[in-house]
Amino acid sequence: MAAERLSRATVAETALRLGDEQGLEAVTIRRLAQELGVTPMALYWHFKNKEELFLGVVDHALADVRADRSAADPWPVQLRSMVESLVEAMRRHPILPDLLHQSDKARANSFSRATEDVLVLLTQAGFTPQEGYWIGSHLLHGVIGLVHAQVETPPRNGGWEVNEWRRMRRIELECLPMDQFPMMVQIGATYAAEPDPERYYTFGVDLLMAGVESMARGRSAADPVSS
Image 1 (tube, one colour):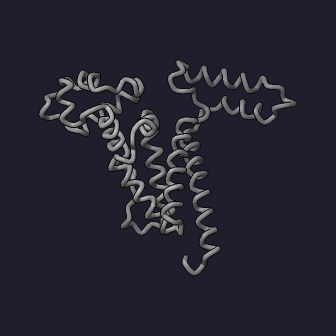
Image 2 (image 1 turned 90 degrees about the horizontal axis):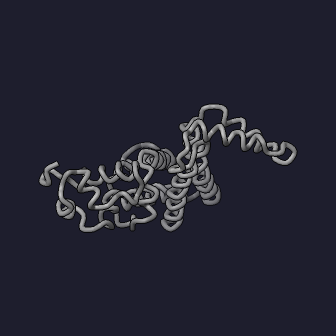
Image 3 (image 1 turned 30 degrees about the horizontal axis):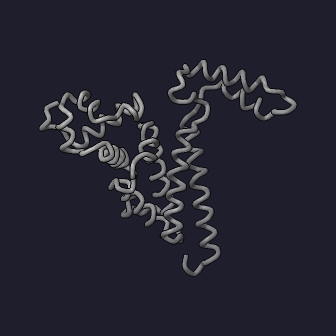
């Protein structure tokens, strides 16, 4: 790729692909330059160092995680849509949780915009800005945990073939003493069926949203005048 046609979006997208395929440690200025067919100096026009590169990648990956404040949908619908968009971004880019941990994400425009959107929605629900910030952090880390801890699938970078890992996991659980672990043995049997990741993620988002919505209802019941 000619250096003059290189864009921040192109560099960020390439970094995401490289990280998703080979891990965060593979994302370096030199390696990206090789992937894009340019010199490292060409990338420094867009990102002065690795820290700025990571921020640019976070900014690019979270570009679609935002609320539509002009929509007529109530706040829970808009907030759920944002959470679902975040789940989708992390499923599409497994490197994203590590990037969020390792970069100063508050400096990424898309992250700050998404945070602002969340605060607007949650103040509509009756929470204070500080409480809204706590809830936003809880939702972010809840989504990270949801994606990182997806059940019924082998750990990333473990070298397992999926079906073989599931077979071994089933045997491991079903061989537990029935008198001590009857429920765990039942869970083992579920590994015989194909996993349903869509059901898993829908359940996880439902669980996260249920807590927020329940607290909001409690606020409304306690202060009916302000609601």
